Image (tube, rainbow, N blue to C red; front, side, top):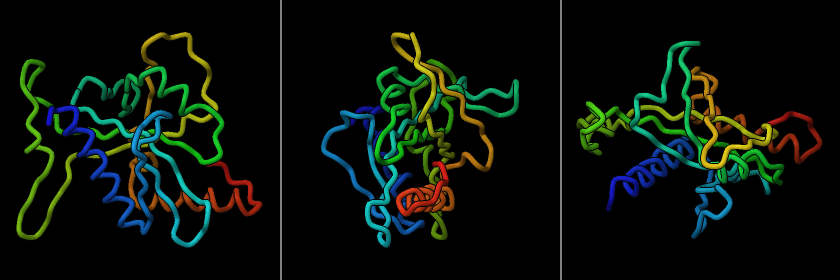
Amino acid sequence: MNINDQKEAFSEAYARAIASVAGFICNKGDFDRNSVDISFASTTSPFASVEVQLKSTSNAHIVTCSRGNEIHFPLPIKNYNDLRAETIMPRILVVLLLPEKPNEQAEEYPEQWISQTPEQLALLKCAYWINLNGMAESNNQATVTITIPMDDAHIFKPSVLNNLINQVVSLRTGGNNAV
């Protein structure tokens, strides 16, 4: 398995861990053609799900502190357009920050992505999410740099996933909470 395959598998495992704690079903399609790697569905509310594009990076240069802690992630234009489009089910981008490589020339070591003792298994470091729905069209040809605040509200965690699913349920049952 090459390093990009390992990052993809690790991102999915991270997302599945969050969903399992939140109590949601994970669905993975055979192919990612519409910028959806995985979706999470409610077990109690039919037709309530959130679709997710997973990305990961160990590039420390995408995190800046100039205007507070932010991620500046170069998202491929196809993913950007797919995620900003109006869809029946909401779509979000989840970017997993992995431990940084010691320097640009160094190889990545997936062993640094976990910490394990007899008492715990920790997945390192942290994933952040953002909803791109309704973002402006871009004239860029290759990538669009997405800014994600590195605050508690944007950490991809079980309570956030619960809130997103609850907003979908509210929308489907006549509420007006936006995802």
